[in-house]
Length: 153
Image (cartoon, rainbow, N blue to C red; front, top):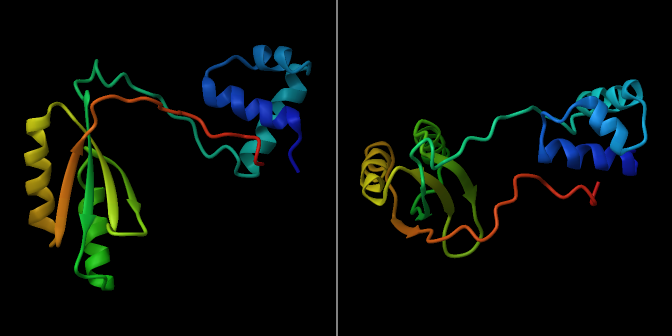
């Protein structure tokens, strides 16, 4: 069972995983060794699954976001395996979600420019048959949460 300090540790590490242990411990009125044990337990119990580095999309020339809504006419295991394989081999596709409703999937693409969408589109069509694809260009990111809320733990 997690307590408030555990939740605070998770929130602080989501903000900046490079925060020094002493700083986290100080903010939570814990000793560094007690804080370290808690972080180790959170890792061991699977609450912390890894640590990543976030890159600046402008600096690495990927400023454009496109959301691609996909409908398929097929739902066989073979098609699903092909689809999973196709989307996992295209690095510009950074998220894929299966949906309820009128569309089967939504894909999030990060691209150097709008024109590059055609390259990704052609790569997908070479690998998998789709019934309908509709692309939507993101004009502005209004909210981008890098972390998850911890109050529901």
